[in-house]
Length: 141
Image (tube, rainbow, N blue to C red; front, top):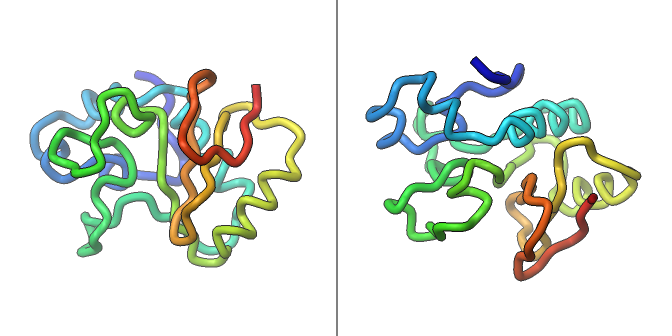
C-alpha cells in the first residue's frame, strides 16, 4: 500500500462510475504518489475551510475534477487528470486568485509542479514535471 492523503477520501478523487467498478486499493493505485502528497501539502498551505475536488458522493455536481475517464467531456489521454497527476480544487475560504498569489510566493514545492491560469472557480495543480498546458501560471522544477 502506498501513500494515502490525510485530508481526502477516495470518493473525492474519482468519478462515481470508477468508484463502483474498482476496489478502493485499485483506485488509490491509479494516482501518482506525489499527486497524493500534493493534496496534503495544499491543505497545509490553505488550512482554513475546505478544499473540494469531487463532491458527487454527498450530492454535488463535481465528479471529474480529480481522475478523469473517457466518460468526461474534458478527457484527454495525456492530461494530468487522466494520468492521476492533477486536481481542480475549489476552496471554501480562499478566492482562487488569492490562492494563486499565495502559491506564487512559495520558493519551492516538494510536490506541486504546475499551477494553471485562466480559471476563477477552481485552481488546477499538478505534478507533471515536463510539457506544457495552455495557460500555465508557474511551475517548480
